[in-house]
Length: 356
Ligand SMILES: [Zn+2]
Image 1 (tube, rainbow, N blue to C red):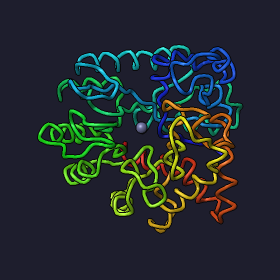
Image 2: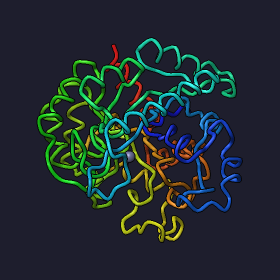
Image 3: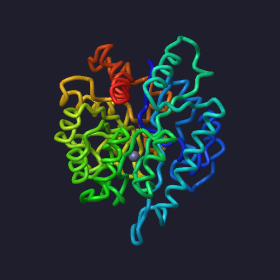
Image 4: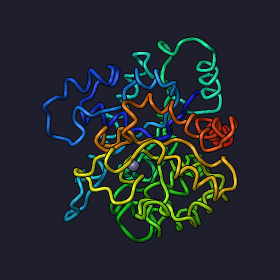
């Protein structure tokens, strides 16, 4: 079945992890044997050949660069200009992948339709470029509001105003507080440019404020449920209901700590914690029960978000194993239409509606 994954940090992996994503996952991992600079070395699960193998023909690919004020312990750049420059390198990597015929940017109704026809033409996927919709995870790198239009012009179509911690435009995961005047200006400019608001990572205060002030299209690219794993990074039932009301689609994330309660980073083991793809269905099912239908859930795996096999479902060896999900959904009683909705249909409907 055709799959859309609404959250991958591909360019971050290419440039900060030094992964050549044109290579098979096994080859990338082999070259990382013995490296200890990052917890997921030699444990990667995402690359372009694996996406094709898994019939994952369209992804939302991020740019990501945080600004940190003095005293902020999170990793990040010391000025917004440096963060902007980092995202420009990331944009250049996506362009290089386009030049190599590996990827193609999807940024409007026409390019989306053309791309979907290509991936549904019954031919093998080997020669098909993986489509990407460009998104910005955390808006710190938008130096001034004017920079947003510059980014729109090279293809930016979705923005999550915050990531982890305090942000310049909104407060993110593990932080608290509101967006303030400059945050409102960002939302206004996003609305003018028809940029999708990614509500993922907004802290509760900023989440409600953003939804109050933004009249454009809202999605949540990678988010699980607070009712199942209690953490501020996850959505409360109230938030899920509000997103459903707004026509949002919520992407199910495959980061183990967001799937099973009690996960300890760097210590817990997926098998011991019983973290399988089945657990993802619990989160998906929770959202479907709240919505009363299967129209508001998709995949937003985050499978290359600074973790790999050490922190993802044990029955997933590479991202191609997302193809196991439809069978699991069927086992839970979901219909063929429900499965199609969740694997690609909901994101497609959302995008067509946003870009019409
Ligand atoms: Zn994230």
